[in-house]
Image 1 (cartoon, one colour):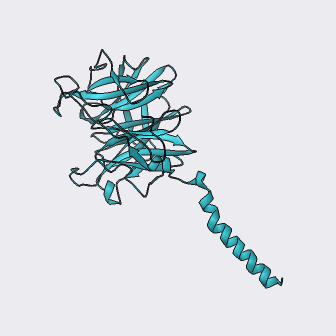
Image 2 (spheres, one colour):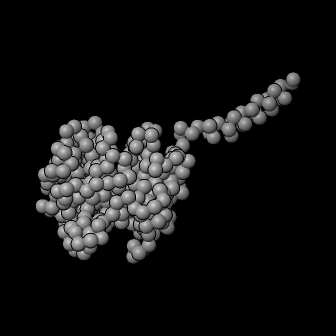
Image 3 (cartoon, one colour):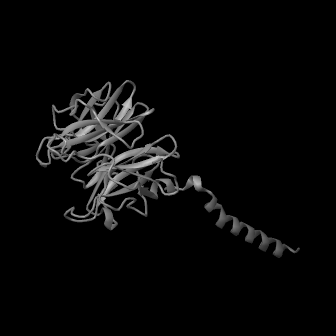
Length: 311
């Protein structure tokens, strides 16, 4: 074989390898199929308002589901159906994440407006962040998930330490890494900002621009709000809901974004992953796989398309 033939053969082999190799690197895929290709479990909602004359006639905004061993926790916001009515905290438990039992002492917290909740467990305490009246967030703690102490308004500052400009900063979402606590929040659903703290008393923006902005695609052009962050395959994934209608009359869809540093996010090109009006989404690992739950306007569950449902 002459030199030209050897060079040609090597070039062909190199080209074939270059084309094939990326396809084999599934571990590097930034949006794994099991997170973006989900199907709903058929049937009625798993959990909803009573529809009767109770304090939780309806539920709204983000309820939060946390699996702790064999016990599943659900904290939710209940109200009598009037948008201006005070929003109270309810609690339910489950052994499988499908069938839920309300706590007999509900509402478990009603001393202040508590809506759009997010919960993490650190050590012996549950930490909750929630919207208060006027979409001003507050933090609460509990030793058992039932008895809560309100620690007051969350003090978020601009990057230079000055107070945020007046106005709401809602849909608070926590992420904890080592000794640093991160707080994602939105301002009128016009974008998602990120602040951090080491003492949980004062939080400072990592930048004064949103880390997740609206648009440019139609589905999230007019509103975005983040609901949860998970760590999966050495990347961070954010579940957020969005609206593509200027008056927010269109569906609040469920979407996904990925990041390597919590600050720079790339949206899934196939968003939304749930296109119906089911929002406030979050992933919960059931011991075998992630389930996607949506909690507004009721609680529903989705499974990876190729996985077998447990029910």
